[in-house]
Amino acid sequence: MDPMEKMLDEAAKNPKMRKKLKVKALLSLVLFFVFLLALFTAIGMLWATKNGAFLGMTKAQIFALRTKVALVMNILIIAHLIVNRKVFIKELKILFG
Image 1: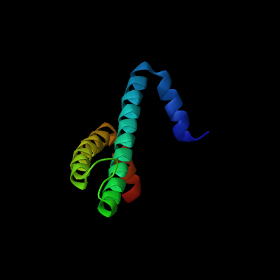
Image 2 (image 1 turned 180 degrees about the vertical axis):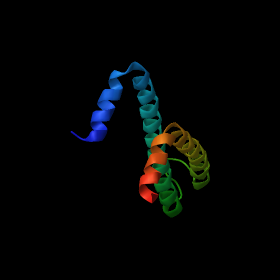
Image 3 (image 1 turned 45 degrees about the horizontal axis):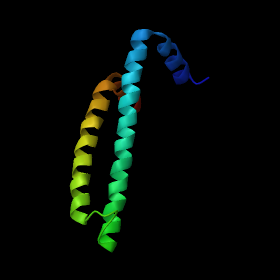
């Protein structure tokens, strides 16, 4: 068994840790879906540039949507780094230490 998987299994048994893991998992899942939306709007921008429209949206409408998605994604990335700061700092120490 992978050590990380073992640690997560043990943490899931602790009610307090389970709640934290649920918050982290939800944040990661929402971030993933926003990433997919950003990817979708990027494809739409490329498509609209060539064909004039994408799913009934003009290039300007797609650009406006993409701007909003980018803002939400940046906020979620910052929240993700804050929630996972201890792990992130340890990973950086391993990387640069």
